[in-house]
Image (cartoon, rainbow, N blue to C red):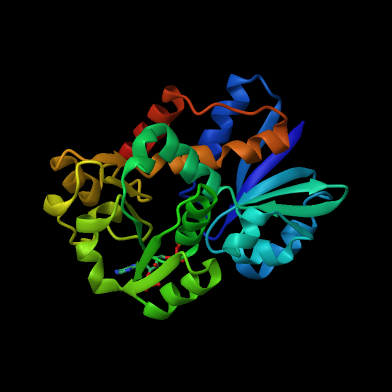
Length: 276
Ligand code: ATR
């Protein structure tokens, strides 16, 4: 029986076992996917012992993604671009890592707002953490040649811009309020809006009709940002799709089947989030 897990600290809140458990059942695979609490100091050891402990691999969540990146023997470009890894597998005894947040975000964006490339303006990214890096990497791979990053801590936005090259520009956090007037795609990668807390303060009255607005926050599913965008009849991209799609490559690596993100899976996770 093949075994995989998700590690984090804490890990109790993770929905990954629900997602992978759904697929194991759906595809009739005799495998397991569990949550394992691993403290930061123990993470490198846990990864080195994956094979000994019978794991095919694991997902890695906060705050262990950078540790997993450093601990790996082989890193895919998706992980190199972000400096963090969320998916681990073994190949010829080597610990290999990738970052599937880029894939998860871009796949969901293409599926839920396929017209996102049609707007003429630059892309605005709010936040400059790991999720912002994964998304900037995906947008650059997709050919976007102008990305403006806003972050509360200015140095972090500048550092992101330096790492990704001249197509990416860092601007002051306060300047984000003008983004609706020029951006064709606006993505929130900060935690603002999670559980209804905080407000990004964006007003979409000046946005063009083809502006697309996305959020990586998925609790609540319709954040204040997405609600404000919808009130102006803009297309929106919620945060749950990224979570579901980022799980696909890991499942395929560990269990040998490329799983499908279905409406049924989505509804199951939506119901679980609503119940918590
Ligand atoms: P992740 O890896 O999920 O992106 P992270 O690296 O902790 O998580 O990044 C969180 C992002 O949310 C950062 O851009 C952070 O801004 P700082 O770099 O200034 O910390 C942003 N963020 C969190 N709380 C915020 C707040 N109250 N106001 C503005 N930005 C906030």
